Picture (cartoon, helix red, strand yellow):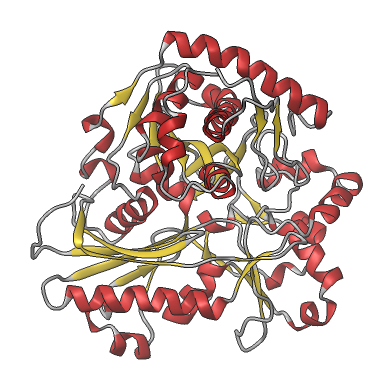
Length: 505
């Protein structure tokens, strides 16, 4: 994935994740230049009532610091032609008439609007709204969050003239452009994904004026730094800056999963499986049962499903059990598959697909005096694989019959043991990309390379999936996980009846 320093035009990729901000430099083959990589971790502010927020000023300072360090390392050795930005989807903040934040940035994990979402499901035609936006009612999307802000913070709500995502607020500060890419907008639950326009119907549902939503731009519309930032970062002053894109879309591109013959599987803090499908703006998009629809741009959509609890669940278990040195993980991988006698629902932070239930909570059933901490961790690893299997069964029909599954995400790529569990649970080989791959950052760089005219298409970069090994299912494990998965879903249905799928019609 990495290469030596050179002199050809390059692109800078800024990747805004849920736990860190990083900046990376890529060449025209989308190979990372490892000498120009910076990363700064941060933590969301989590509150007992379900809040998950971040101060926009802090986020801006983190991005500035990452770019400061990158520019210092770049020096005069490279000509940076373009800057791409990847960010987590679904964040929300309100700006006043001067463009200053009135609210903190609400992260996708902020679930304080759960009761509002329940009311929306009772009062609105969710199926009709889903046909427009490609999404259901859920606390991760804007309609519920906007309604909640109106009720919980009416004074602040009244000051807001524009709604934005965290990443698009940063883009406005850096370039002076108040806009949102069609890609980011598709993750709000407010976009008509067929027409690539804001939906008046969803604006009414959310209780806002459609004029308060930002101008929509496509992937390829460039901007330039403001004068102050151009002076601060002379190496980037002439670069084309492109509006932020959703990290899931970028992960597909960065994994070389750009057609229906490849499903991108991401397992990091959370998890997802997605297929990129050609679909021109203006063409009707038919809903697929259990699957959301977002956009990469006006010519391609993403069909997929996501889980809320991936690596975060395993990190929680290890912290809870005092595993400071990762000994429990090593011991857990020594267990025979499904041999611990436990049935686990890993709903530490509610769950998205397929049940879309903010109130779902984690369960460890079957504990007995002989249960060891390593057995709990092993059961946790398998439970996340069961959730991936649940969304794979929804996404697979969208893909080609002979599709490959291409894996990215640090939690999975750094764990061969977990890779084997997932491959066996899915009953399908998984292609394991390089461990140091940052798929979302690479995807944003690839989009910038195309949009700046440095390459003709995504096919002009190195195809990592062709070069990478795969992990095959183990027949013994397949049988064991099939039985355990049945217990898993029976427990889920018992505790959360009626929510085993958010839409089967």
